[in-house]
Image (cartoon, rainbow, N blue to C red; front, side, top):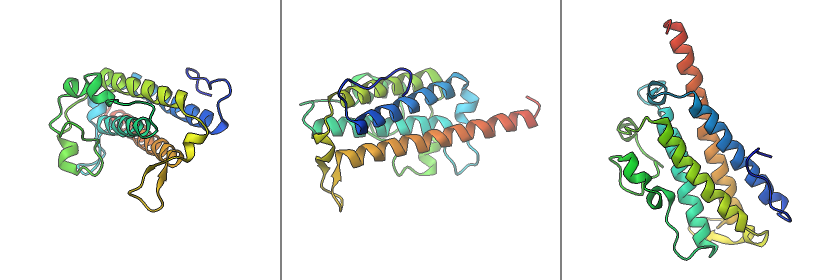
Length: 193
């Protein structure tokens, strides 16, 4: 299990595994951002690729958006706002994007316009999203996992399917950011910096 979030007593194994997965991602993101400085966060392997900062923002936005939708769909909350709005991160980041943008499907020009390269802000936002994640998982039951929460797809999306999808998205983008960190360090060492 992740060192900061332990399973609740009587929690199903599936929910405990999800809790562990999201906790491990949070810990890895913290480690990544400990070493990050603005130049590293801006780094793009090519002009057609994402920056580390954009990847971290995007994975956080997707997790925030999807967990908020999940909680509302399961009736855990009657009116829950994403941390992006409720905790003031949209104002702090002050991006040129529409307010509820998550980065899904954004083109290279939008990625280039990102403009937030402060590791403390990126970490702070994700920590708030992680707290939301753990809160939703705390109230999740085994029966909730089979609840259909999105009928726009064929097959329809259950809570479990969405949770696995979110975890996959988060870990994929985290791995991309870690890969960029390695490329950036290598580039600096080759340039003698």
